[in-house]
Length: 278
Image: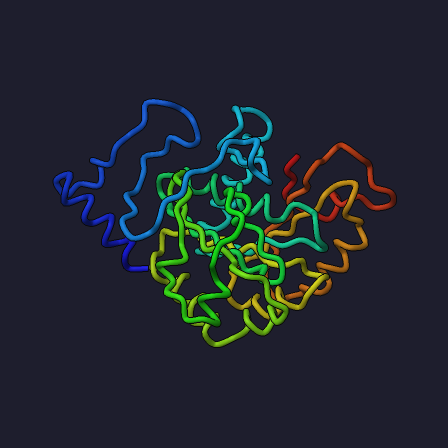
């Protein structure tokens, strides 16, 4: 990932060598963060909101939706600074509970913080969908890196927002657990974690109860965030997911999507999760 550092250094030299010479925006929009110049990483243009599969905070007016992710960002940054962490895994008990939406929007929110750069990696290799959140019908990514020796620099993209770089999942594969536990993936995870101390890495992981991928990958994340959807996720699913995870990785907390739309019977998911986002 040295090309990112080289690009920043070239930009500083062009502006006289001071990091304070980065261009500033006069607006307050989330998408108007002072940019980094990405000379090696391709930049894509986000489609308009109607063409997106997921609602992104960059396309939303200031309000509860955006505020929720700002609050979540503040909580994550505080916990990570206190513990010296920089790698977060995002998962859910089962499918279709909003984990990818959470991983993408949290990464966007983190990338707006001027103290950090962010790398979002789609590690849900059995069902990779992160690229679709950015309007891409398909994209080569982590699978091609692991199995086809595709150069990493050719797989990354910058969505033109904040200080975010994305590594898509690539083509879907059946042996995702073995791929994530491979020596090549282990080496990549370690390189990503230690290359730049000020960078956050967010891994969009598979659901805990669907495949064994999360347990196999847990040594490479500092903490795990569990996403549930009120009205869809049962408290039993959350309890089972927490039991499966056990002590393999610290649970940073949970995100509750669509809170307040339905009340769960018996024990509510909100009783089991420590971070709540409506």
